[in-house]
Amino acid sequence: MTQPPTEPQAQQRFGAIAIVGRPNVGKSTLLNALVGQKISITSDKAQTTRHRLLGVRTEGAAQFAFVDTPGFQLRHTRALNRALNRTVRGALADVDIVLWVVEAGTWGPEDELVGQLLPKGRPVVLVANKLDRIRGREKLLPWLAERGKDARLTEIVPLSARRHADAERLLGILARHLPEGPWGFDPDALTDRGERFLAAEILREKLFRLTGDELPYSSTVVIDRFQLDGRLRRIAASIVVERDSHKAMVIGGGGALVRRLSTEARQDMEKLFDAPVFLEVWVKTRSGWADDQAAVRAYGYEE
Ligand SMILES: Nc1nc2c(ncn2[C@@H]2O[C@H](COP(=O)(O)OP(=O)(O)O)[C@@H](O)[C@H]2O)c(=O)[nH]1
Ligand SMILES: [Mg+2]
Image (cartoon, rainbow, N blue to C red):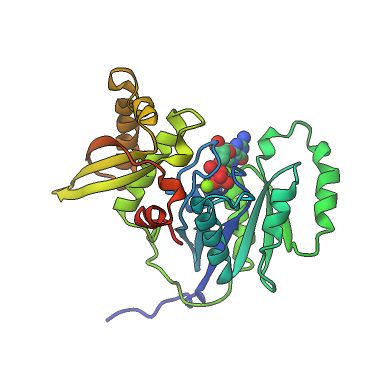
């Protein structure tokens, strides 16, 4: 015979929280900190995040579904940029809370542009990120006072996404705004994306981090094969670049760069999947892909 539970079951709370902001403010870093695992790739280059990615965290009776988005771009010239902006608008259409990330102490037209997209009638928590970069906290006070006049904001939270304790404090603040309702995911779910997608993203992160400025924006990663062999993941991936000169850059002298990319990517995959990985990486040229609508679709970007 089973005992009746001594404590009444707490009412479940569940909500979608969109993380928005201009490029490079630390949205993906914050998502990883809130989820407690590195699922979204980060780098100091704009347009690192190209897809909408869901990160799930369950804590007590509360389940948070965080939606990471590409940074909203002012330049609409290329097909890839237009696809990224549409992804941001889509993510905002159906959320319970908005996490608007900016850099503490700075405010510009690109931040304002994000402000114009905020949905009405939903709590908006402004995260003033990269607080660790501010020397002398009192310098931030006039900036905070200015933000405090903004009637669109429910709360303002200065923090550093790199500090674990800060992310946990933010989670507590968000919990207060989370609507009551049944959970949308398994309590131990981490993301809605499969290993194939995550593997491509990890490799793309290494490409962004290890190559020069001119290269990453026009390149992408395709998983050609993903096979399970017991616990072993056998993965073949292609890095697709626009020009033969870019291909030479990614391969590096004697293949040194592509070897380093592959090794770092494999190590991250093994950590995230908690399993051994055998990774093969190819470098291919596909000229003009970032300008071509059909190719943007074919490589998995939402149009
Ligand atoms: N100093 C500092 N750097 C941060 C912080 N959060 C993110 N960054 C860095 O800012 C850069 C952009 O981060 P990312 O999460 O990719 O930004 P996103 O484009 O908004 O997703 C990366 O180099 C991060 O390591 C922070 O709290 N402090
Ligand atoms: Mg990002």
